[in-house]
Length: 437
Image (cartoon, rainbow, N blue to C red; front, side, top):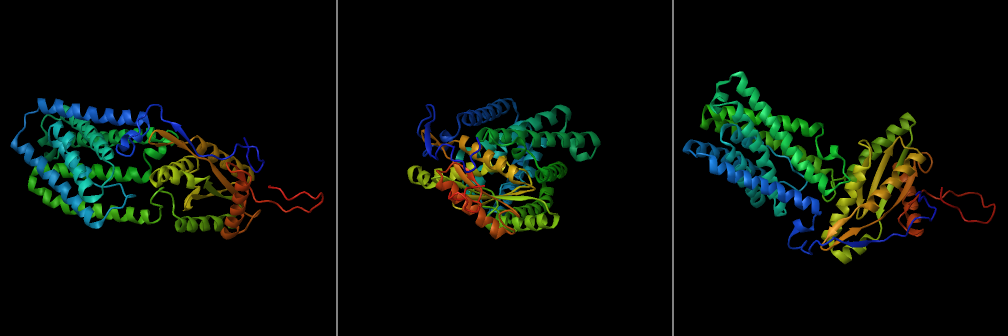
């Protein structure tokens, strides 16, 4: 239904729906506060990983040489983690180069080592770098372990002696590259399924690969195979591999820190300053080319009630959910950011009035369908939005923001959960007040 200032949509509300039997243990057990399909999926992956570890541990003959290689690779990973701790890693930074140590374990050692390799390093990340909810670390270790274990099984099925990898012959190296690619695909798929299960409205392309992540995966693949070759030649050569891996990790971390400085830490959207810079650039381009452009200010209705009733942690989850919903419904070149508090801003290049209305209404509808778990309830919220069109309601960013803000204020006056454009001042011919566009 079109709710552009026509007063026809339902009034705004913040509601709580039962979780359908989910115990109220979200505070003590964060995993149980997640969607039931996500809980089942995470438990299944961890159970499968534990079963695989048990099976291969029972069927593997351990040797001193294999244990020494495993410990050496784990020690190198620990050194990289310690270097990361010294540099610092905020919550928005999530990529590392630890695959450089997991892949050699998968290629050179029996599969049980590939399954075990992520466990000590994930524990070290939790204790030394950044603590997060335990189930995420456990799932990460299980997903990486299963992917590395599958790559190890595939490699050993085709290469009888892993030592052949150090000889530089074609077939073992090609097989190692293919199995490293298998590891990357499986690991990404397992994590993407979890992300999509947590937020079914998200687009698959948002939880799979983009150009940057593909490049990083290729770098990790090459590093892992190269370290495996060096390790196969002589274990002490890991001392030569460690410094360049640490340098690459430092460069990667620096790039992620730069990106994190542009984003809002809670939602992952652009922060206000970064959004304003990009919006100014788009407005200059639109003015030069004569194209249309629309600006939206989106506000979560009665957000204070959520914080007062359920606490700020649940309020943060609502912000995250709304941000993810907005991002999933917009084009790649739309500019979306968090303006502060519960307000978001969206710039729609090449959007006229009709397109801006359609997009704003789609955002309103999608957010209204969103539900955030909180103890034994599911929290739903609504949004109001003000829309301003370039050359119609303003010629620069300040004027467009002011016009959209007035339209947002009007949407709230009319009862919230609706979208409005700025009121157009018409000549007073019949004594009626000015109405929204």
